[in-house]
Image 1 (tube, rainbow, N blue to C red):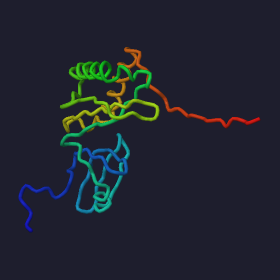
Image 2 (cartoon, helix red, strand yellow; image 1 turned 180 degrees about the vertical axis):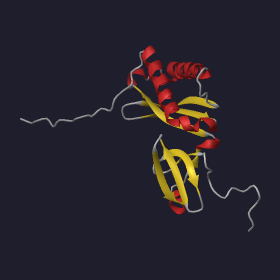
Image 3 (cartoon, rainbow, N blue to C red; image 1 turned 120 degrees about the vertical axis):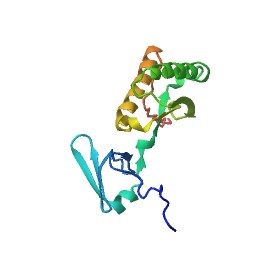
Image 4 (cartoon, one colour; image 1 turned 90 degrees about the horizontal axis):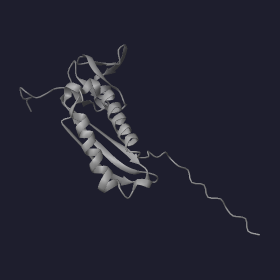
Length: 171
């Protein structure tokens, strides 16, 4: 078939920010029919042949991106998570994000699951692609805001626990 005039031939362009399945996150500095160069940080560059680059399923963040992560709360708060903490944390975070330099297009916190040692909340924030270069900073800042909320409200953030069962000696 013939290509359409507006059909992209490549998933990215020079200047786009991409995330690869090998964990590489950076800006496309060079892109030719043979080579893709991604700048990571200020001085490090990764070089990929085009087939290698395409095999790593590049996600182009420059058109918008979503941050989605789990935040665990202590089971000690299980009686207030759904009716008190969840609405409160949503309201507080949305208010904080109104004044945030990289304000999301959409933001929500929902109950995710009851884990082995945590009650898990799912945090989902969608951002405009112009903030793609700040992706890691935004993720850290969201987690700092959640930590600050939990500290102010005296909500425990649990740690992984190891349960040891001891065999009793029969006499």
